[in-house]
Length: 479
Image 1 (cartoon, rainbow, N blue to C red):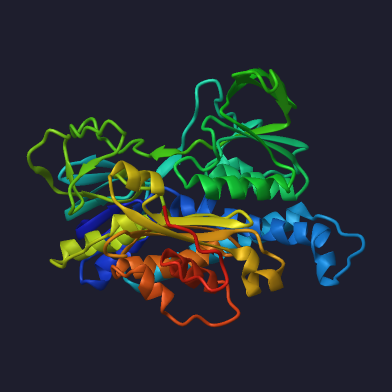
Image 2 (image 1 turned 90 degrees about the vertical axis):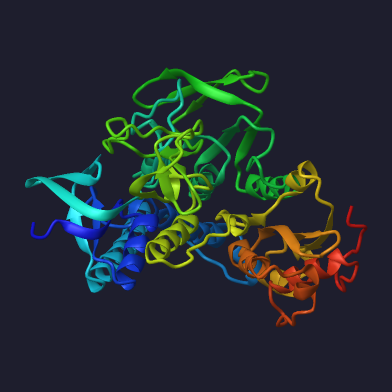
């Protein structure tokens, strides 16, 4: 290649990396983006957020055609599943978006280097098809993403015991599917294959689905997912008892429910861990925190260890390798923030205002503090809820399951947290997040005019309920 000196080198072209690269370029920095995979976009665009949402949408339409459109006066005959075409559509969506990212990178004059990066501080060594290149830069940003966690006794084999990557590409619908983990990934993949005809069993060590989320939301969503035929075994863990070419038998612990469960395939979806393979942390004497993350400060500068007094000169990290939720939108905002910090601006991410979403149907979303967290922190709060079962638009859609709950500070009325489950919860949470970002109150939401009939009216009613003002709901004491 030509010039090997840059203002900024970014390792990893996922949501954190490519967004940061674009913002760096916008701010006048000569920027290089190093990526080992053939397409840009990282896990999210290629084997995560985007393909899973494409399958979720397609599978929900298929399920509705089979089971729920009769209520709307729409009848079908001879409905059949063309799984190959569904997967082809999913791949087409991915290709369109990854191609779009590549065009954006080119339009911003960012140099893309295909290869595996290893830190040779203060430089970056890249192993490419043509050999090795040593890149120099004033600043290096690590955005290396994450990979699925593999459990002892449930090791991936890429066929019978798989990660979410393989679960996006089954060529046939498994007759039986075991899903270990009832977090967002596990529930979404369970939904896809249950809608398409698989008998799905979800095994979760915690006593509720979506551990760490509001229990009422988790309970309500679980009841709706059970309508898909999904069986939930909570408070259990599993390990492989026996595996053949066509079957995996899981042994449960404790074994009160059933001692052994046979499945055609097993998806292990218990979370993700940062990806550091080949990065050379050890040879650069960079230690990880006790949670396996890089140690950074508020300016995303990397420290050699938790005990180090000063940051490593010119080294930054963002995305899944640093503290915080492993979410694409969190990574993107960090990418913008670190670029602006490098440009001398006040880059910032509000970690109390990062929404989480589960794209099942109905959907679930939350932002800010949970009731449990507020109680632990000794923060006095008020609570307001509104059921979507009395929302006009939800009923017109035939989607009355769900609710909106707001938590507001007892004295200031500032919104501290919210949970939503129901149709398009992923969209409903955005309004609440925006008000929280502006340090707004429940009354601010309650006195904002919302169009009728719309789903967001449920957000307004929940805000009104915080003050006992709900018009269409039931007002109760907040605590």
